[in-house]
Image (cartoon, rainbow, N blue to C red; front, side, top):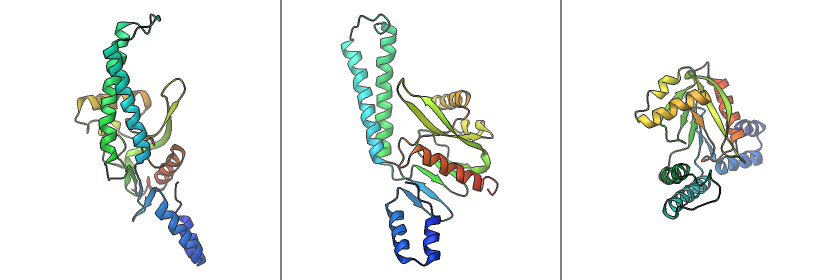
Length: 219
């Protein structure tokens, strides 16, 4: 639920105490916290993180099962030992990393995403970019990635005037290579997913664009 603070202003201006109380209750119940200085905090979703943690456990279990049992199939492609090794160990590693990251996020008390008149602070990924000022951003757009044959993954992509500025901040060599690959293949190193947030992709894209249009020249 994206709360529009104009509703509150409208209720107050009418002097309608019932409407004011109703809207105030909506603020308390919403997953997006309005703060001072036009700051909005979008909370991490424990339900979504739990689901991702379960998927990670399944990946780990599947990878270990393939390593231990070495299943055989009549299909020569799937029975290729090199392919099976990559799939089994890849699944195991992804499962372990996912379990570590999502378990850590489950106990993270910080908001998942913060929007303010200064910029964006993203706490949803393994990358730590810090505050991304609006003046560093060139555009906000949607990026779609084919996650599997049957599903797509949607991201809010943060186009940057100088991507290297943020890539060079990453001290971990492997993470830095991933950021370089993201910038090369998808146009930017910074992509925000709502997989762990208490909001949906459509609302987040709209909200970030509204903030960008409002503050890109004022920052």
